Amino acid sequence: MELTRERIIKVLKGVNYPGFNRDIISFGLVKDILVEGSKVTLSIVLPKPDQKLQSAIEEEVRKAIFGIPGVEDLSMKIGSRPQKQITADAASEKSKLPDIKYYIAVASGKGGVGKSTIATNLSLAISKKRQKVGLMDADIWGPSAPLMMGISEKPRATADDKIVPIEKFGLKVMSIGFLVNEEDAVIWRGPMVHGAIKQFIEDVEWSGTDYLVIDLPPGTGDAQLSLAQTAPISGGVIVTTPQDVALVDVRRGILMFNKLNIPILGIVENMSYLDMPDVDSKIDIFGRGGGRRMAERFEVPFLGEIPIDPRIRIGGDKGTPIVESDPQSVAGKAFFEIADRILESIEN
View 1 (cartoon, helix red, strand yellow):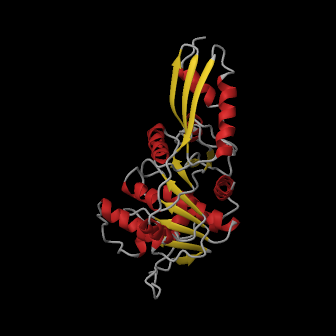
View 2 (cartoon, rainbow, N blue to C red):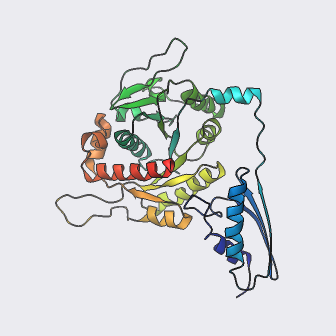
View 3 (cartoon, rainbow, N blue to C red):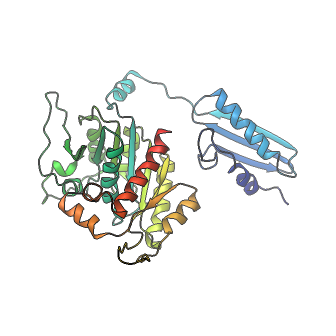
């Protein structure tokens, strides 16, 4: 069999980053691959200097490459990204960040897939398993947290001009919807969006919050970039529906997180099937399994399926999400299972 670059890539996909279930190719560590006859030349760039990590990866890569028939020589260069110098201004900016352990971004490649429903119920499911959980509704153009959480009051400010998030169902909630009238159209350009995202993280009294779920606007744009520049995101969740027209946009979301160096926690398939309590079979209205197939294709975790259930819509409209109103329902249990997988991923 001919020795090719594609064959080298396939073999390196079997080399996992130490401590993770993802390989060094999907993490983007392998920068250059050159095949010249029986000689292979590699360039690997680690996220930070770490001699122990470097040795472990080098050993596994050598073992994998020399396991390929036809390889007689390997030239491998392993380095790390240059570390940024922390200036006084940068240190001051960093100190403004709240003491939050985990930032979880919920995104979608397009609108209309139920991203905010997932973000809201997911944050509530996490709050039932962990304390000190918050929900930041960063969907600037379509804030839905006030309606879905049944919150009509306005947040107050502290003496040092910090905005106090509103608490409901044991969850700290902040949304642009608290600050603008329902009748007002939010028409903001990039710099204003960046300022809002930055303010929602730095100028909101998140103290005592360990887990912050962030509901991003759909698509890939200013809000996503601003969030990545402002806070150390622990991981991103991509929401989709089963049909092909929605799955096309999953790729966009995955590429966005990869370019922003945000780990992908996995894909959630919403409106996966119609849950009929009195019928044994499940009805696949939009088709089913598309989210799982995309997860397999891009080698990211598949977190689970959320069924179509009228109680999800009713709970969102009435301000009592299904995780709160009917946690033992099929949909409620699905949210808890997804929360377990996310917590296991970010905490380990």
